[in-house]
Image 1: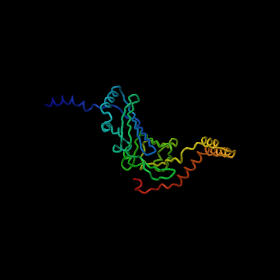
Image 2 (image 1 turned 30 degrees about the vertical axis):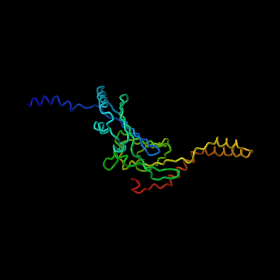
Image 3 (image 1 turned 180 degrees about the vertical axis):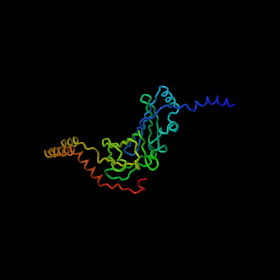
Image 4 (image 1 turned 60 degrees about the vertical axis):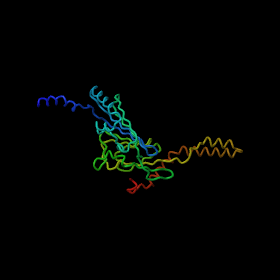
Amino acid sequence: MRKLAIVLALFVFPLFVTALRYSLGDHYIFVTIDSQGNAKVTERFNIAFKTQQDIEEFQQKKTTIGNNISEWERLNPMFTFHIGGKTNVKTESISVSFKDFVLEISYELSAKMVHVIDDRSRMTIYETNKWAFTPFIKGTDYVIPEHTFITFILPPDATIIEEGELFKYATVEKSPPKIMLQGLVATSNLSFRYIYWKGIAPQFSISLAIKQLVEKADNYMVVIAAIILTIVAVILYLARKKIAQKITRFIIKNTEFALSEHELK
């Protein structure tokens, strides 16, 4: 009886020790926030294999699992949603490129990633919701693991408010507006704020205005007025960047961002 048990063990044991052979490299997370506060996320995991057999086994596993995120997470806890968590995901897709050896998870959040903390005629100030970063909580801090890179891509008309602990570690690009983080980072807060500028008025066409004035001209005074209008418009156009920068600095400097606890929830 004992010999039979040993023989069975020799056949059964390999079934339990057989596992996929691969290693994870860098992990990239791209979070794109639109003008309404909705977010689309793409996570890319670089995977390394040693042999062609390892690639084929992983490829077969991908065919078996498909888009079942729970099965992917069971295969490796890193293969999951790192922004928002499972309960806040609306759509998802999973793909594996065996040409570049990249596993990619793309999804949309079902709730807005940001909320309004101030709304004015010229601008709206947004802040990220804290629940969006709960998957990074380790103890009392938010921890971005080593080899993890996060890029937040904001709307083109946004201005990042570079205040708070996050910006001790972040790299900021202003055009287009981006916030980039590279682990290892441990911080008490991953939230950030930005200004979204509203359109003031429909786009004004200088050439069309002049054409309409000239067509209706009854005397030289209207033509002269059109020329003056053109000169003023050209001066304003050339100085538009400096004017916009001064307005932005003035608003940020004179805006009070202090909030009560219930406003941040």
